[in-house]
Length: 263
Image 1 (tube, rainbow, N blue to C red):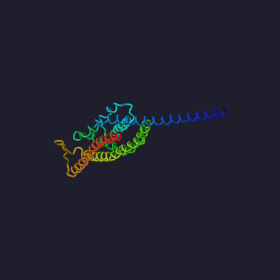
Image 2: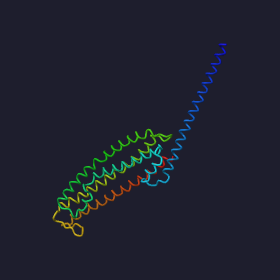
Image 3: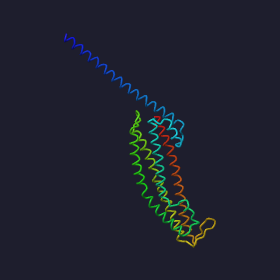
Image 4: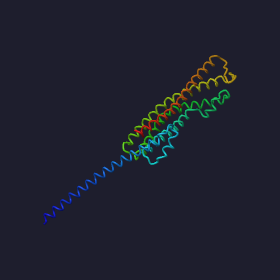
């Protein structure tokens, strides 16, 4: 009798163990299917939200369609990073401009005291330009650390924070590559501008302004001014090109974000 009870208890234990194994395997299978379902749903929502977005300005409204979608929230972080870094870039570059820049370009109406103040501002702007790149790099580093922290809880299947940060690193590298060109153009512009101002100060009272043109007392002074003005114009074109390149970069970022969602 005791043997029979022992065998029955043994069989019951084996049955219960089998049931437990089946439940565990089924749970894992269900969890795996649920995770795949959630990832597929997130991808479909992401593709739907971004399908008609062809300009970065349309992005925020599209992202609001699915506020809980983790993949789109990653894209929102990338977009926020791009917008904030663009604003920071503009702020930093403004430090490499003389004060009241729009007013300072009217040299023909400037008095000697105006020109001397402008020369001092240009010297300060040139000095500021030399410190901008290290500050920009430090800002990128701090921004990256915050992005990585914010992206960590957003993993969905293969959409991992590490893959997201790889995209962000590429984004930051592209933005960083533009800055030295912008700073070089800005420094060359300010330097040439300062040479123009210095010539006007040097020949103050000796030159005339006729139909918006400076008439200097000597050909050498006129040639020096024209050379500096030509350099200034060329640098100004490169500054304008930087704005075009930055706009093109924003567009290419959008393409990469859409690719990230749809891969």
